[in-house]
Length: 125
Image (cartoon, rainbow, N blue to C red):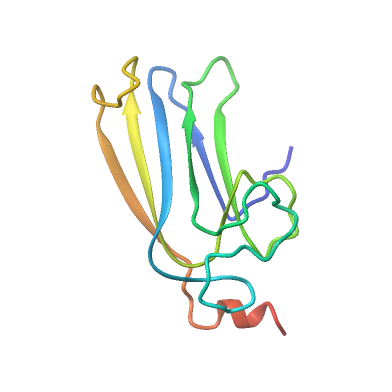
Protein backbone atom coordinates (compact mmCIF):
# COMPACT_ATOMS: atom_id res chain seq x y z
CA UNK A 1 0.00 0.00 0.00
CA UNK A 2 1.62 3.27 -1.03
CA UNK A 3 1.71 5.93 1.66
CA UNK A 4 0.64 9.39 0.57
CA UNK A 5 0.68 12.47 2.73
CA UNK A 6 2.81 15.43 3.70
CA UNK A 7 3.60 14.17 7.19
CA UNK A 8 3.11 10.54 8.24
CA UNK A 9 4.20 9.41 11.68
CA UNK A 10 4.49 5.71 12.61
CA UNK A 11 4.87 4.01 15.98
CA UNK A 12 7.14 1.05 15.33
CA UNK A 13 7.87 0.36 19.00
CA UNK A 14 6.81 -2.99 20.47
CA UNK A 15 6.95 -1.64 24.05
CA UNK A 16 5.75 1.97 24.06
CA UNK A 17 2.58 3.79 23.12
CA UNK A 18 3.01 7.36 21.92
CA UNK A 19 0.79 10.36 21.69
CA UNK A 20 1.48 12.71 18.79
CA UNK A 21 0.54 16.39 18.90
CA UNK A 22 1.02 18.62 15.85
CA UNK A 23 0.32 22.35 16.08
CA UNK A 24 1.47 25.61 14.41
CA UNK A 25 4.24 27.66 16.04
CA UNK A 26 3.93 30.80 13.94
CA UNK A 27 2.01 32.31 11.09
CA UNK A 28 0.33 29.77 8.81
CA UNK A 29 -1.17 30.22 5.36
CA UNK A 30 -3.69 28.09 3.54
CA UNK A 31 -3.41 26.92 -0.07
CA UNK A 32 -4.97 30.18 -1.29
CA UNK A 33 -1.97 32.01 0.23
CA UNK A 34 -4.22 33.61 2.83
CA UNK A 35 -3.24 34.14 6.44
CA UNK A 36 -6.06 31.97 7.71
CA UNK A 37 -6.59 28.74 9.59
CA UNK A 38 -9.49 27.83 7.30
CA UNK A 39 -8.82 24.71 5.25
CA UNK A 40 -9.79 25.26 1.61
CA UNK A 41 -9.85 21.57 0.70
CA UNK A 42 -13.31 20.04 0.83
CA UNK A 43 -11.76 16.56 0.64
CA UNK A 44 -11.14 16.81 4.39
CA UNK A 45 -14.61 17.69 5.69
CA UNK A 46 -13.90 16.54 9.26
CA UNK A 47 -10.88 18.86 9.42
CA UNK A 48 -11.86 22.36 8.38
CA UNK A 49 -8.81 24.01 10.01
CA UNK A 50 -5.10 23.76 9.15
CA UNK A 51 -4.01 23.59 12.79
CA UNK A 52 -2.73 20.00 12.83
CA UNK A 53 -4.12 17.56 15.37
CA UNK A 54 -3.30 14.82 17.84
CA UNK A 55 -3.57 11.06 18.02
CA UNK A 56 -2.55 8.22 20.32
CA UNK A 57 -0.57 5.56 18.46
CA UNK A 58 -0.65 2.19 20.23
CA UNK A 59 2.49 0.07 20.39
CA UNK A 60 3.21 -2.20 17.48
CA UNK A 61 1.60 -5.64 17.37
CA UNK A 62 3.12 -8.10 14.91
CA UNK A 63 3.96 -6.40 11.63
CA UNK A 64 1.27 -3.73 11.97
CA UNK A 65 2.46 -0.24 13.01
CA UNK A 66 -0.09 2.46 13.83
CA UNK A 67 0.20 5.80 12.05
CA UNK A 68 -0.99 9.40 12.00
CA UNK A 69 -1.33 11.03 8.58
CA UNK A 70 -1.46 14.78 7.97
CA UNK A 71 -1.68 16.46 4.60
CA UNK A 72 -1.71 19.99 3.20
CA UNK A 73 -5.07 21.58 2.59
CA UNK A 74 -3.96 21.93 -1.05
CA UNK A 75 -3.71 18.14 -1.42
CA UNK A 76 -6.11 16.09 -3.48
CA UNK A 77 -5.73 13.19 -1.05
CA UNK A 78 -8.85 11.88 0.70
CA UNK A 79 -7.23 9.81 3.48
CA UNK A 80 -5.59 12.35 5.79
CA UNK A 81 -6.58 12.43 9.45
CA UNK A 82 -5.71 16.11 9.93
CA UNK A 83 -4.78 19.09 7.81
CA UNK A 84 -1.79 21.45 7.87
CA UNK A 85 -0.94 24.55 5.88
CA UNK A 86 2.19 26.47 4.94
CA UNK A 87 4.24 27.58 7.95
CA UNK A 88 6.07 26.07 10.91
CA UNK A 89 4.63 23.25 12.99
CA UNK A 90 5.79 21.53 16.15
CA UNK A 91 5.50 17.74 16.37
CA UNK A 92 5.47 16.54 19.99
CA UNK A 93 6.11 12.88 20.86
CA UNK A 94 4.87 11.72 24.29
CA UNK A 95 5.88 8.16 25.23
CA UNK A 96 3.91 6.14 27.74
CA UNK A 97 3.57 2.55 28.79
CA UNK A 98 0.33 2.21 30.73
CA UNK A 99 -0.26 5.65 32.21
CA UNK A 100 -2.92 7.52 30.22
CA UNK A 101 -1.71 10.78 31.78
CA UNK A 102 1.55 10.38 29.81
CA UNK A 103 3.70 10.77 32.93
CA UNK A 104 5.61 7.48 32.86
CA UNK A 105 7.56 8.17 29.67
CA UNK A 106 9.65 10.88 28.10
CA UNK A 107 8.57 13.58 25.71
CA UNK A 108 10.43 15.27 22.91
CA UNK A 109 9.59 17.34 19.86
CA UNK A 110 10.82 18.46 16.48
CA UNK A 111 9.88 21.44 14.38
CA UNK A 112 8.85 21.03 10.75
CA UNK A 113 9.12 24.03 8.45
CA UNK A 114 6.69 24.24 5.52
CA UNK A 115 7.31 27.95 4.99
CA UNK A 116 9.48 27.81 1.86
CA UNK A 117 9.56 31.23 0.26
CA UNK A 118 7.88 30.15 -2.98
CA UNK A 119 6.18 26.90 -1.97
CA UNK A 120 2.54 28.04 -2.08
CA UNK A 121 3.21 30.04 -5.24
CA UNK A 122 4.33 26.92 -7.10
CA UNK A 123 0.87 25.45 -6.65
CA UNK A 124 -0.65 28.27 -8.66
CA UNK A 125 1.65 27.95 -11.67
